[in-house]
Length: 621
Ligand SMILES: [Zn+2]
Image (spheres, protein in one colour):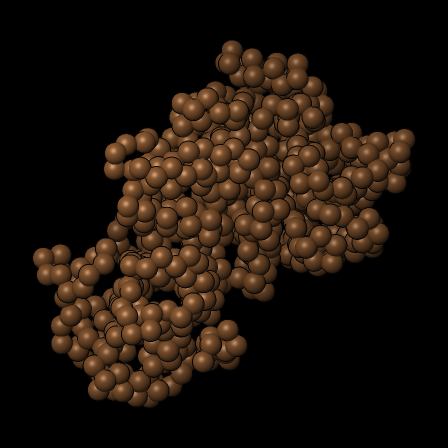
């Protein structure tokens, strides 16, 4: 009866077509299946969603085709209706219909409490089409399965009904292989509620506008809030929870709509926390929530177009194409539907000053503003967007850390540039300006009270900047696997460097001989890195994930393949599961041959997601 105990299509096997056909026969005889035409002129139903006109039952062949496209025959029509019609808080679905258009199914019902009809509810189930060639409308292929909440209206107040209903539905549609909920957050109370439930703006521009309006409100009311606090909001749930300690007044009309200005139509005053009050009074927004269906782990992806604006001269290995190619591959592999996109924010300067010398950061800013071609060393090329990109790279790691500590994601990959692990307290080198992973470690401590952080660096180059920053800190374990310093930039990372002062023993350098491959890398990782991390028992694992130990990479001599990255990623997840609730934030460092870099990063991200697919081999086999 209740859905909770039964997984739909538990075995994952599709049902025989016969069962689906029998189900259609039964429901057609009961008058529960119709065809539907979308028709804005003919209002068949009440409610706020799109209007449609019920028509004759479509041919069985069409019903079957739509069913297969949406459910892969994992559930029969009778079962689906039964699963959808859950009874919660004494509210019951009746007069439920399934309406079929050419490519979607509408579920439409009345909500009853006892004998009384108290509401109406419509869901629209459809499948997006993905473009195979970007910018061209054709050809396309079937994409994400979407549940669109066309409308839910209740004439009776019932706090928590919709919330409970959608929690059940989330589970149901997860098992049915759907990817997304969508809705228009239009109801007055709904706007706050949906945000609280983890619905986010579908469109980042819309989110930024909402954030700007919140900042306008803060200024207008002269509230004790710093602009930085508003700027680092990245999700509607952050807005809903924003500054619960500050209460502001709102006014409500008879129908339950709120405004920020008192007037004759809104006589009733209420005090609400800032974020809640703001959302109750805000305009509509298009919301969506990802249902994580494809992957056992929820992986966040930090990404921003701003990372491309750090321009480097032609021929420079650390170029924007690394990220555009990675993004294109993620899209082409259909991974966007299962990754949680995380937006980086510009960090507060205090967060950076905890790692870098303020005067150094100021010199970097000035060099970019002056239009210099490089900063500090010749290899650290800069352009107009370099300063902003470097700040956002550090802020990207912070956004990844926020996501794993606020449970928005289990782990995260930060596709940032410029990289960071060579940058020291007052030193840019090796394409690095701000030490992203170090800023992340310090931020995790101050924002989430994390005690023990492990930074595992498997970039082929020694992470000298990170090592120096934490050399005396016994609470930060730094483990680096890299090509031997006698052969490779930056010439540090010898086995004898084990930390300083109180930090002795919290640095582990594992140099590898030139031409070492997967076997040597994995052996060294298992023999040295794993026991050290195991003994340290970290509360968070940060990865300095460079992919330049790959055999196709032009600027070092190790000969690893994607297999090594997959192996190490899996083991890191196991360690994280044992010690820190699976919290891993992986931060991109090097990787310069675009093909092998992209193949390795994709294999790494898929492994973070808990996928078992073997990695595709890179170009050149
Ligand atoms: Zn490197």
